[in-house]
Length: 150
Image 1 (spheres, rainbow, N blue to C red):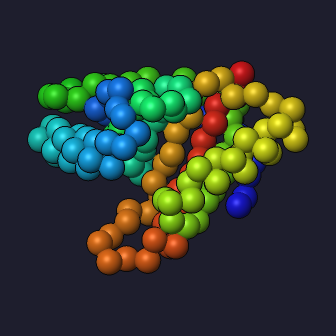
Image 2 (cartoon, helix red, strand yellow):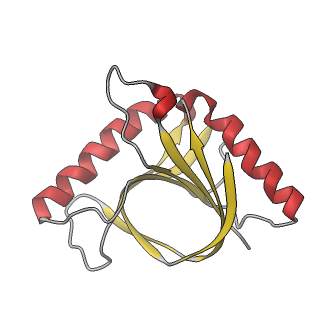
């Protein structure tokens, strides 16, 4: 996996945010992406980037998560919130493979951070660069793993 330190701009995410049980994440993702896509479409707003899963903190048996798409900060949307994600220094890993091994990929990002003596600020997110398709090869999924730094 390629990992690098970058500088991120502040971004706005049109999202559905909830505290979700870990075993309920797949259903939440499906519902939230559909809800945000419908709100963007109804407002005539084009997403500014790939789908995102933003995590406010480390998972336990539940996670505070916002799922959606980057959007203009001036967007007016029904039924979803606009979440401001502060910019600044961040570590970004580009992972290709099945979502089943995402925890291992995040482990690589964490190990890289320890080696570089940098510390995350607490939130983190996944940018789903490729959209999985039913019957598609999960090994072709590309996901950017983003960990903002203190």
